Image (cartoon, rainbow, N blue to C red):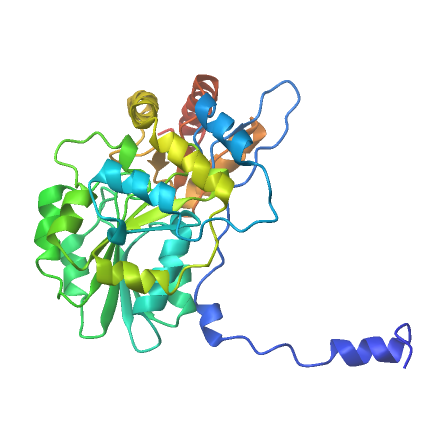
Length: 374
C-alpha cells in the first residue's frame, strides 16, 4: 500500500498505542524553568532555574579548554582524579564516593537499588520535583508528607509514615523550593527513629549557601549513620550546571549498590576536569556562595518589609507562598522580562543580578497593591 494512500494513514492512526507502564500516569513529568520573555527596552533575566548568575571561575574555563581534546575517547568511568580530590577535601575514603551526571542521576539510582512495586517511599512536599518522578517510575507507593506552615519538613509526621514496606526516605536541606534548612539536632532525632535497613537520602544541593546556626552537616551525619547517603552537586555554588556533575557520600555497601545502577561513562572528561579545578578553588567557591547568600538575605528582607510572608531562605532562591495567585504573579514578572518558577503552591525566585532583584521588588510591590489591597 502506498504511504500517501489515505487508507494507509487511517490504518496507522487507528493502531493501538505502545503499551507503557501504568505507573507513568501517577506523576507529572519534570518541567524545567522557563526562559524569560524578550520585552523591548528591558534586559531579560532568568530567575527560574536556581542557576549561579556569577561568571565562571577563569581557572575552570581554562581547565575546560585544556581538556576539550579528543571526544572520540571515553572518559575515566571511575572519575578517579575527581574522587580523589573529593576524598581529600571531605575527609572520606574513595570507597565512600561515587560521581554521577548531576545529583539527579543519584536520585534515579537510589530508587533503583532500594525500591519497586512492593515498597514505599517518603519525602516532604512540596520539595524537589524529581522525588515523585524517580520513586514513581519504579512503582513504589509514595507518601508525600506536607511541610509545616513555615515551609519546613514535618519530621514527626515523616517518622510516623514509616511502615515495614518503607525502603527510601528523602530529606532536602535547604528545601527546594521553600528554603528552610534542617537543623542537626532534629535530623539526628529523626534518624534515630528510622529502622537501620531503611535508606535515607539527604539532598544537600544548596548546602554551600546555608548560613543558619545549627544547620545539619551531612558529612558528620553520614559518619554516624550507615543508612544515610549524602547527595551533593557542582551545579549550584560551583556554577557548573551545564556540565552535569554530582556526587554521593555514603558507607561502602551503599556506594557499591549505586555503582551498579549509575550510567557508565556518564560524566565526561571535560566535566570531571572542570569540577576538579573548581574543587581546587574551594575557598573562592564558598566566598561566592556567601556573596549570593548576602544578596538573598537582603532580597528576602525587602520582600518581608513589603508585607510578604517569606519562609526562612537558606539557598540561592526565595519562596513566595502565593497559592492561587501564583500564576498571576508569574505573568506579572513575564511582562517585565523576568522568568520565575511557578510551582502552583507558590513562586520560587532565584537570586540573580542586583538589577533583576530590584525589578522583582518593584513587581512585587505593585502586585501587593493590586491583589492584596484591603
